[in-house]
Length: 202
Image 1 (spheres, one colour):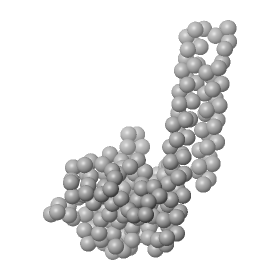
Image 2: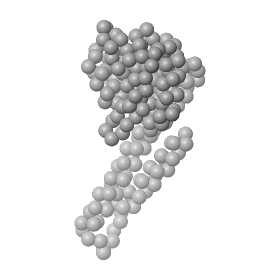
Image 3: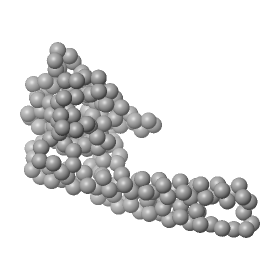
Image 4: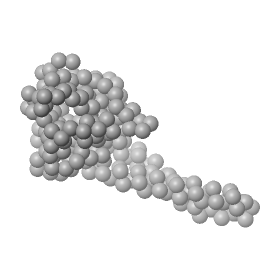
């Protein structure tokens, strides 16, 4: 919740600064400077509005995570998302796609639930997971890195064997709010917990 409050304050400030810049009118300003100020203002407003939308989705998902965690207290629950490396594996393998994206495509944010039966993918406030993989198809779990653009995330690399193929699924490890990645120490702890539940080698 602290991350949401901090982000909310910054977004409000950014929106306020943007609106102020858009409405600045000063006769001493050159036309070029006035245009630059207006562009910067609208950019600030746009970033604040988009950021606010993402924050609302994250807050909604955060509430769902708390509810799901209360119902499955022995499971490890992780905020994750469909970053490019994971998307590529899912899109290139129909068997994995049919399992992990059974009822809907992997979204920008989702919950990865891990327990002794395997892994599940949850989107939003639903009564059942949108995808899953059984424990007997998981052969290894390790800590790794994955990225999206300029952003790099610690991830849990889950190696699976299905339909005669071995595939590596890199699930980004995000903070409970889903807005930032977790640090290495937290990532190591999460991967250890996942490995303990699945009882697989490193």
